[in-house]
Length: 80
Image (cartoon, rainbow, N blue to C red; front, side, top):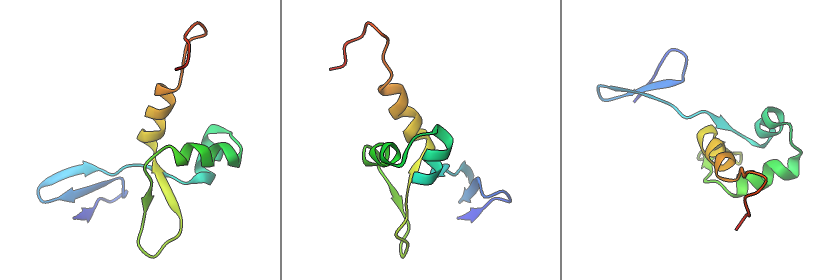
């Protein structure tokens, strides 16, 4: 595996694939303008990415987007 020039893609064998964009709690707070408790609650509901030797955990931006879509309701929709 080799990283592309801008590190948003990598090459695996002969395929070029996009790398996931990762967010930590501070990134969630800044991007979605939520408080730390909300960012932590979001991260608890999603699979996390953690690198060996590092304590910091991340979530994939696509997972956050799917969670928001799944948890968005119309005014007359009853949440189960």
